Length: 107
Image 1 (cartoon, rainbow, N blue to C red):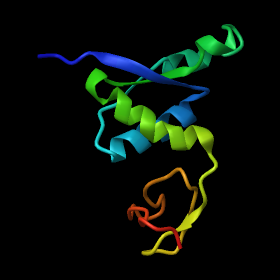
Image 2: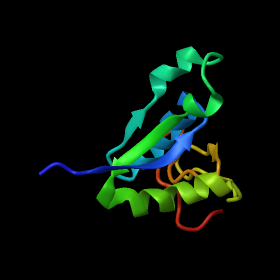
Image 3: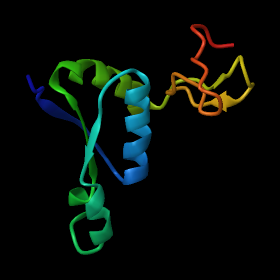
């Protein structure tokens, strides 16, 4: 049985799309990106056509949107990794430096 995919986000560029893809994959979700190759046509196409779309299986769409809510609001507090001491943006659930999960209570 093949699952149906649902678009959950339109990233402004490939870097943002890959950041979100990593966030969702770290949570165990399958992710597909579409529209990456249109970036080479920037200037020739309208800006909204060049955006990269983030897709997940239909059954994971609710969970994926919940994970992206923190990214979109961007108002979460920074946190310090208990393993390596790296300071991380609040929307990330794991340390970008060493991969350690964000603690349940921020210090």
